[in-house]
Image (cartoon, rainbow, N blue to C red; front, side, top):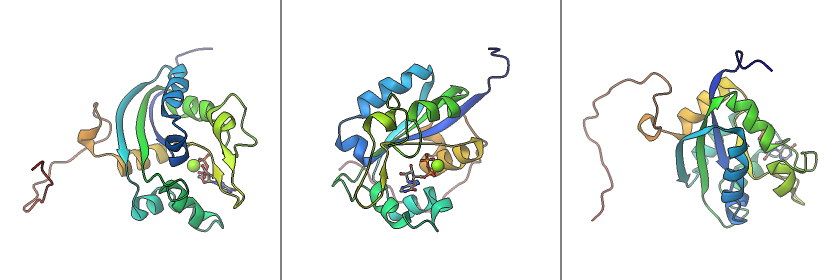
Length: 173
Ligand code: IDP
Ligand code: MG
């Protein structure tokens, strides 16, 4: 296969609350390392209703949407945090999606992350352990939603400098 056509891409990965609750973060990062990509940003996030709704806005008319929002907020697992990462490298989006596996964990390849660790709950939610961006438009939208420019170690998208008049910041006492 020619490497000439490979495009450097960035993609958002979110280890969902079931992944954290089941202590799968290490396994997931190890599995993703097969793709030979680099991690250019990472943070542990308590997902607000606003972030969850914006992240999944394309799915707002789906019957499972309310359950999906409470799932990503950790309400099903008593674990109100996720781990968000940005991976970068040649064909990153496709590589990560392939290692993640199909959306439906029962249909996912058993050697994929979702196939190995996911499940469908009795309420019908696909608890599929990780989120992975689906295409370049979505990855840019999602990365900008989850990360500020200074939280990413390489310049990814155009930025602008603004001066904020009153800024309230939380500092260590
Ligand atoms: P993706 O995560 O593979 O990109 P999307 O269609 O973007 O799949 O759906 C986002 C998330 O919503 C899925 O990862 C899964 O947790 C949940 N989901 C998607 N389709 C269904 C469904 O038919 N039933 C229940 N949950 C679903
Ligand atoms: Mg998707």
